Length: 167
Image (cartoon, rainbow, N blue to C red):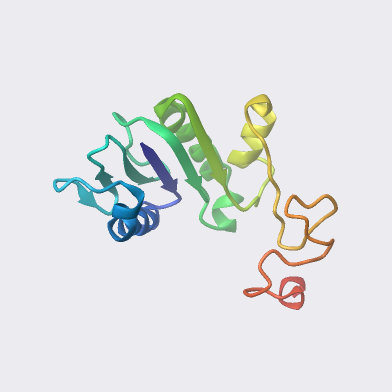
């Protein structure tokens, strides 16, 4: 069972829709399918006992457990990132709602732009660092890049050149 969250419920549901559509297209090859009674973009199940639910930060996920929990950009933009209220809301929701949905042995992945040291990633790395592995992928590679890029090499040169990133 997968729980995928993002800063806003509709945005999270777009990921749920994409995964659902991939299962519809490639399910026979992968040996999985969707149940006939649960195919919504934000909530679907497989007859094999799995499924996905999506939600926005602060949204409802109670009553659901996740073997894989993905938090994709819990903060929408720099304005929210610099708001102590927004940062605190995301951290409180993670601690009280999302984290309690983790099944035993669950994997939790937090993907986010680091706008502020006091954001969710900062909270997790400061207060629970023994449980987390940080993988930094800056737009321009730094020394010791985990992808093996040369220093200064862009993360996605097809999308953003060095010049564009420096601008």
